[in-house]
Length: 98
Image (cartoon, rainbow, N blue to C red; front, side, top):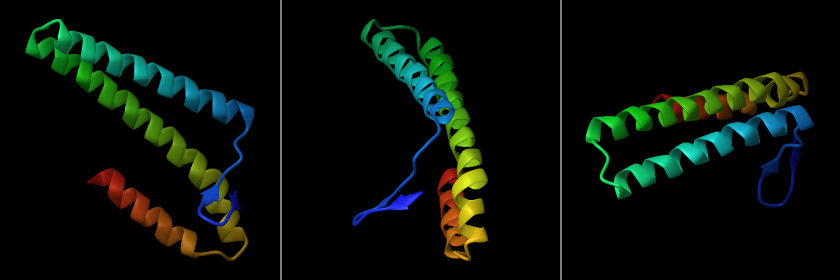
């Protein structure tokens, strides 16, 4: 993880990058599909079913990203004595649990 003047950035491995991008591409496709369903007047419960699938996919994305964050950024910061990262992690978890 690096910091520049405005915010932190993280250099991801190729494997992590491609995994996250692939998940987001699938989610993007699901959202486009939902829009088409609404545009074509699909039945409400069919749209809700697809929306729930998209929400589950986004939750899976968040879990993967959070796991990677804990295993890399948080772990490294704690080893380097930057314990404020724990507070940042707690704040992030609180946002996810809302």
